[in-house]
Image (tube, rainbow, N blue to C red; front, top):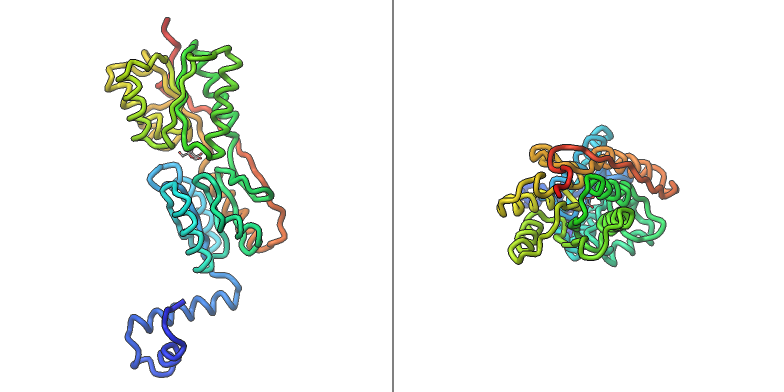
Length: 318
Ligand code: RIB
């Protein structure tokens, strides 16, 4: 824990003046932590692994976690992994080495080997949030992603849109797969098929969505009257590209997003609201219960989403 020898630790305790202040402070901190863990068996630390802290959605869930966690004296250690599985595995290793009491985990896609080992060993409570890691028997708190996008795409079809572009997120995540399924179910219900359905994937990124839609317009391939985006930041990226091409929103192109992050309201974006504060609160409450009682059953909770009607969708023109 300290990186120094037992002889140095012993000297720091018996003759502190003989040890460099920085080393001594490190040793004292490690001893405090060790005593705390050994007495209560807990560090009071909770780890939280998220794909991309730059996406407003994840800090919003963190605030739900921290709000409830601080009430119980927990400190949350946040690790952002830029959507990379290797970075995710490094973060998990570090949290295990530090000795957190439990982890709230939002996976970037496929589960790293260390995560599967940690779950199999049952050595540490882990609550999965938002995205299903695809590991059987794990606790998960998420929302009705398939139904949320089904309602969003159905809303566009109800407005008379017959040529709709789907702007998808990170392929391989459960949220993206379920939203795509919901979208295609709505298209089938409205008898919209073939090249009337467009599909672009932009990894839940605003800049990637902007570039993809801009490029599609540039090659004359944007023959759609509506866009259903799998998250708000991509919807806002698409909005920028549409407006730069002198198309009006919603008169020429309707756009609906997903999440309802604060930027959505400022851009008057119609979107699907995810109850991110409730998601975060539920995750930390379930984790603290699991820390107290490791025999707790691994619960899976699906919270409802709802459409927030604002100004970026309108009836399709002829
Ligand atoms: O914006 C990031 C997206 O990925 C959100 O919709 C959230 O559900 C996560 O899965």
